[in-house]
Length: 310
Image 1 (cartoon, rainbow, N blue to C red):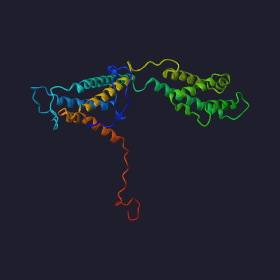
Image 2: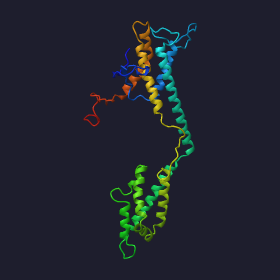
Image 3: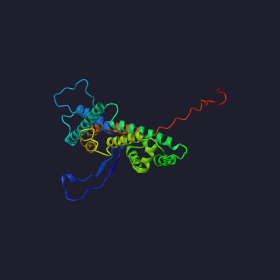
């Protein structure tokens, strides 16, 4: 039985060590393989290995998996298969433990954080302050020129600095880093004397003070003016464990496949039996990648609205 997606690689050169053994082929795992697939395959393969290994003297239990024709019970797993199986099982167990610990920590964080995080609250509060400031500035800019100081034209100048067309207030809908940059540019203008004169002259002091306070809260919440502590204790990157599990899986599959030999009685049937879960998994993943074509309408059924359909 041959595993699909095998390509010939280059032969390593140099002084020979065990780790320098020639690599003549590389198994390409399905590109959309995920950890949950590997967990399920480990359990399926483990069940098949347990069904094959029957120490002498142990009677077959009624609920044991029946072996197909050609597959004979073994007293032990051949080392060629058993050793990579143990390494694969260990790597998967480590990956599974890491994911479970991370999921538990994330769940605890959500539970203790409440319905809204400080970032959510700070972002919403800041957006509201900008909306209020825009409404105040727009009102002052809408006044007619009446010879009083400050002139409404100054309010229009400030409005153009804060909310230029065509974007206007859209900057508060951007991603936090983009919004922070846009707000910083505007806050620089607001701290200048000309803008402060407009704010004081048109009664915008309270709007300005609340906006400045909210801006500071936003910067602190998102780590722009201070360090935001990590919410989850311990590492959150499981890529090393995932890579180790994939490498162990690739090696295990190749070892199982190469165990099949016409001169080893029952080896070919055993390999087919052990690799069946992987082949089924690969086929399932391949089917999920195929685009689903829309079915053509039945020519015997006229479309709605056609003559004679009412």
